[in-house]
Image 1 (cartoon, rainbow, N blue to C red):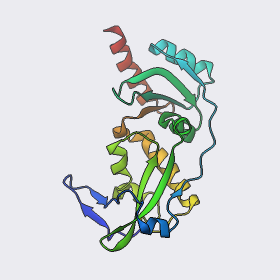
Image 2: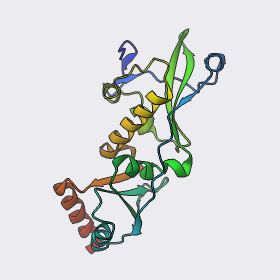
Image 3: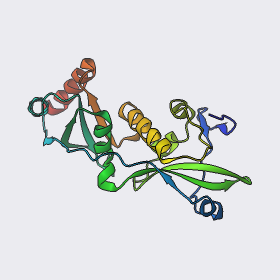
Image 4: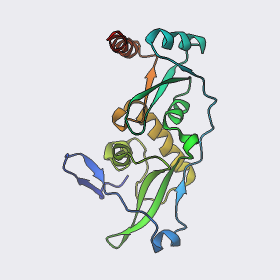
Length: 202
């Protein structure tokens, strides 16, 4: 991946300079937007869980799934009481993002910047989320993609990028969109349930 477009921002983190809205003449000339191939829609297994005991009971009822995901409210950021149970991480994150419900897609779009064609990235139909928008231009995120941020994408490349994005969002929680628990990480589960129990007892 070319690093000539990296710059230092105020937080001293390497970032890629983002583009704008991508609807100028060059975007039309290059036939516009390239989107990922949509992932298969999961068949959600969900239940209302208002306490740690209910949560564990439903987890067992759904076959001790690998992951549990809960969605945060778009406005308040508060986690919902409905939990989804999945064995596939990509499916769990798609549910957490409400990817199919919102008709989301990961898109690359071209624009002119400083007399050159550059490429921007965004998630279609996702409510504004500055942390996620910044992530799509962060150097360490692209290091894991093994692709050139300023190359014309294909749908297959954008699909790989979306899968990498989902894997990253599962453990990088700054986005505040959802929370994924991994039942293979016993310490993480125990800590979460202990904190939930403390809140439940207050």
